[in-house]
Image (cartoon, rainbow, N blue to C red):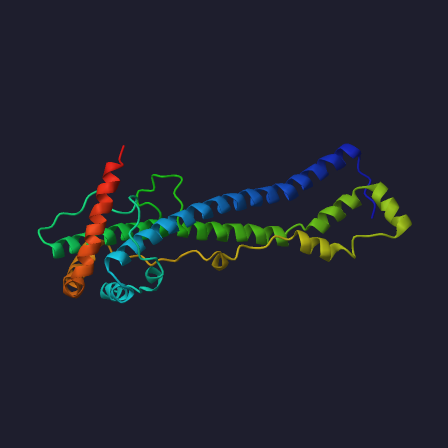
Length: 261
């Protein structure tokens, strides 16, 4: 079918089609770019969270004790057991050692401190900062929602006006193109599926990103009795190693405090 429109009208129609077609794709690319930058920030948060979990693991001495610790407060320990047990840098350790009259008391206090810091980090990783005052905050649920919105837009684009339809639409508005097809017998029919398949967008497979899914921990004040009792029961059997690690921690705190500007 031949459409005999004036050239200014054709230009206006084609401009609207191009704006709609390419505009939606530019929006999707912008959304995907932002998602990628946020993903990098969330992985940085994951690294810090893993260090906090690793510090608590280090204080608890070995994997069996770590496992029993989380079981005592009703938490699946699997994700936390994967964190490397080590004494981290000054960003993770306290600025000063919590005060206690006995070595056992020091152990209880520092475990409570480490747990409290880990619980807050887990909450912020999943839900963001509680006051939502930081507009640059990135968290797990935010990334999940963004992925869902991007995938919805991808679905709309892929099932909307296809690249082949746009090309065909442009061809029908061009008498010159139609004249060439009439002479050569060429059409887009044989290439439609190939063009649309190659230019289709792939949705984000959120699971394939392998983001850490740490459980939300109970606030310290709701499990303080369980943690205190656990530490007191486990201290006698491991007191020599615990005292050594507490000494190492105090030394690290002193070194970090001397480096403060």
